[in-house]
Every structure is written in structure tokens, then in C-alpha cells.
Amino acid sequence: MSRIRVQTGGKLYLAGEYAVLTPGQTAIIQPIPIKMTAQVSPSSRLQLQSDMFDYAVDMTPDQGYALIQESVATVAELLEQPVADLPPFQLSISGKLEKDGNKFGIGSSGSVTVLTIKALAAFYNLSISKDQLFKLSSYTLLKLGDKGSMGDLACIVYEELIAYTSFDRLALSSMLLEKSFKELMAMDWGYEIVTLKTNLKADFLVGWTAQPVLSSQMIRDVKSAISVNFLDQTQQQVLSLQTALKAGDQQMVKYSLEIISDLLASLSPAIYTDKLLLLKKASQGLDAVAKSSGAGGGDCGIALSFHPNATRILKKRWQEAGITILYQERWE
Image (tube, rainbow, N blue to C red; front, top):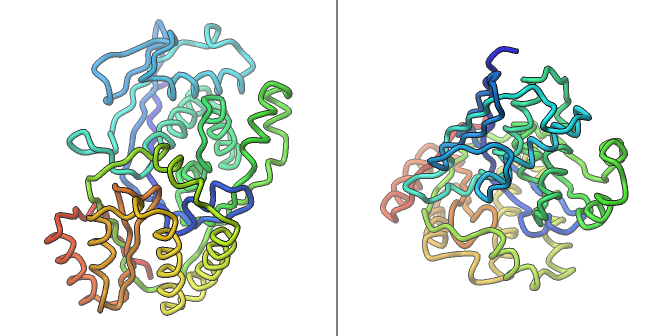
């Protein structure tokens, strides 16, 4: 076995965050090509190293390395061998999705999970599809009790703009002890991942507020406010946005994103921090639209700008508000 090197990126929600926590709801998610890298090489003993920490581990349980260790265990299940019987390796992960100790909020835990499984699959010469990689990564997080929608994993795996419709994670979690690994992997989980080819001409921008709030904490605080009305209205606008992106309909894209943003704000005032409010308001009067992304309450927001002058002014306003432009790309 030779040295293997693989990469994964991050993700940000355009629309559907929070709603997608409910099975059957759809979210639109954009990949962010800020990369993490894994290198795997043969070794005399199993060793795991991440630049998040100043120490390495084996498979002795360690809270900091729990995601990586559980991902290793998943690959062992796929190989139908105990971890101890696998040809030993050294796995090194680098490329922290953070700055000065503050996470960018673009999906580092999801990226680490996908990255580890992807790297070890390559190392052991396993041919797995994107759909299998998504299932294996989701299975890993479910084993750890993760309450997320798994939409971040879907986007990180597919590395394309996607519409993701969530599955019933509670029902699947209850099956972890009832069904074998093979049975679970063979089942239809009831999710849908559709890659989107947009005909929209726009600048896509990511603004980072550096005001992180733990997603799990925000989700607990806000989830109780989610109503059937919120879900119905959000789903309607997410599907309209999906259609508008394909058609390149700028006005409908703006309208749907504004409605979705207002629906999020109605859930809880905590979603829009002072900086996220500034990030959103910066698009006012411009041929552009901006909103929070993900759990809100900090981290990142996104914008779509439909004119070069609007992009220039928006970026200037963000910079004046102390918002870092984390990423920008042109959609044609």
C-alpha cells in the first residue's frame, strides 16, 4: 500500500436550514472549496494525527478524536474486520477550517468524517460510490448521537450545489441496534440528493462574522419554535428557489431568499446576531440579496450579487462592518 492523499471541502446553506431537520424537508446547499487534507500511509502501528490537536492517538477512546476514531471503526465494519486486524496505518489530517481558534462554520465535523472514510477507502482500495460515502458518513455520525440533518455530509460528498431532502434520522438511529451493518447500508433511507445546474449569472459571496455559536446549542434553542406553518412556507420557497436557480430567474431567487430569511428571523431573534444583521442589510438598495447561513447566531452569511457594481459596494460594506470575505466565486 502506498501513501494516499485525499481532500474534502466545506459547505454553506443557501436555504432550508432548520427546516431540513424535519424529515422530508429540502435544503439547498453550496460547497465551499476551502480544503482539509488527509494523508494515509502504511505504518507499524495505527496512529491518528490532526492539526486540531498537539498530540496523536491510537484507537484508545479520546474525546478530541472521537469523530476520526468512529470513522475508522465504520471502515472496519465495511471491511468486515475488527480494527485491530486491519493492516496498520498512519492517518494525518490538516487544514483546520478555522482562524485564530474560531471555526468558519462551513462544516468541519462533517468534512472530517467524510475525509477519514474517503481516505481509508482509498488506502484499502475500496471502490465506494458517492451515495455509499454519504451513507457511511451519516452512519458514523448517527452512532455518535449526532442530531443534524446530514445535509452538510451530502454537499461535502457530492462537492456540487445540491438540493437535499432529509431522512428520518430518529427512525434510522433506532435501527442501529436492531439491524446489521450490511442490512442498514442496503436499505433505502428515504433521503434525496439532487445536483443542481444553475443558469444564474451572479457573484456568490461568503461573509464570515467570526461570532461563532455552537450549532447544537442554537438548534436546541430554536427547534421548539419550528411550526407546521414555518415548514410549509419554507419548503414552498426552497422549491421555488430550486426552480429559479435552474431557470436563472434573478427576481425569483431574490424573492425566495428574502422570504426564507424572514422566516428564519421569525423563529428566533438569536439567529441574526448584530454582525449578521449588518451582513444582510448590506445588500439593501443593491441588485443583490444576502442572508444568514446554517445555524445562524454567528459564523457565516451568504450573498448573491447580480451586478459588478453591486458586488463592489457589498464587499466594501462588509469590510467596513468587520465582516471577512471568506470566499467568492462567479456563477455563469
